Image (tube, rainbow over all chains, first blue to last red):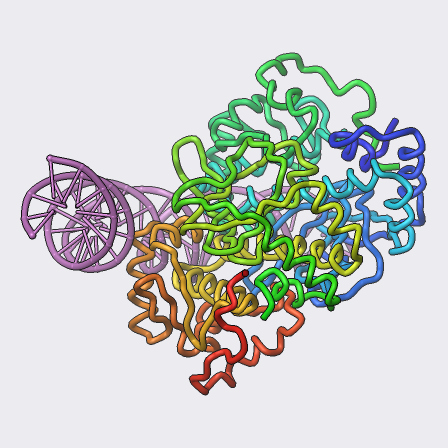
Length: 262
Length: 262
DNA sequence: CGTTCAGTTGACCATGATCAAGAGTGGTGG
DNA sequence: CCACCACTCTTGATCATGGTCAACTGAACG
């Protein structure tokens, strides 16, 4: 019953039992709770630890002087927030909790030990970093080239696959605790227009999005609307995802669908 | 008379003479020429070397099925194109030459030696990677939140500072070999609208952009219009740049303004 | 209850897209 | 040397996507 981080990294590399034990240990470190709408790290900070999301959603965002806000990525269980702070002088963006958030705090030394103790772990963390960057690039494409309907469809597809990777989906559904305003800030639209676009997606039968849950009855159809192709996520088991056309059973994920990072 | 890569990395870390010699050696490796509008690497490729831009401009871009193209970053002399290919399976985007492009090809082993031979170099390359990511994030903000005039002003500011870092500006001017179409693909606008927006910027006296050259008579003013603040570039000498209000002399960069990557 | 926050709706507007045509420039081959 | 082509830039007319402003609903919570 692997935790979210392990599940995530095993998309990229083969981990040994020892590696897995290390991650289990880290995930079991004393965790910190952040309340929704509070910041975990602020732009300009120079924190001395990095955070591993255990439970809940966060977002990476930047704010302009006049208050405009752009979410540049979401963080879900299994995501490491910013390896970079050990190298860069200060945070160039903020990380805020969207839900009640539980994170493990990993100190510099711990991370160093972790990385130097296992080549697989080092590679996996590198990989995670590079995948995050690929996601950044895709977001540029999303806001730069796609129109509203596509943008939101695309974001739903991406997040659904990312959630699936860490075992947080159940069949066609998943918790999805974003407000329409969050969606607006992530897609560069206004919340009013997000609202209307969601109605359109609902009316087309492509998504059910209510009570902080998302259901995608036909992922392949949604991918088409969102001009989504999953290669940029670099999942090793990408075939599983891209063959969503086959997901015609209503089956639950049998093993550990609820196994949020212990 | 340092080369572009050295100049770039010295924004981040202190290099020893030995480190500098290493970079000089690498920059002097047999170089490859790519003609304008040709691709250096294509999405889906799994190349075995990485490229260091010595001369000319390139762009990182993704294309959608229907032909829409989004440029997600530019590469100028001193930029390493994609450390990631040693880890990720295949390229998730393409890199194309915008001008006649000269690059050095660095093989996996060479890079490995370089990195393991000097902690400063390893840190510097890490840093470069993280700064690139910060730039990616800022581009999301740019296309997501800023309107046309701001977007283009912002892009001009960013590229001008990046060019300055590698010694490719002369006073208030620089080569700037982008077509209006390139600008459109980078900002998520149409070339028609870029044209009109440029006219506006010109009329406001903020930029001179013709014959593949860019002049910014008052960088501080342009930064204001573009709601640009340079922290995200993480330049160590950031003060030099942010105090552009003081650039009231018409002075040339005295030392090595022409020192394009040897 | 009153307050706050998320979602919803309507009317109107503006930014920027689309379509189309023409001008200027440089390169190439007959 | 000239004619032609391709490419970039420019301009005008029209249109549409999505923004703005404002008001209202309903649920959650103290």
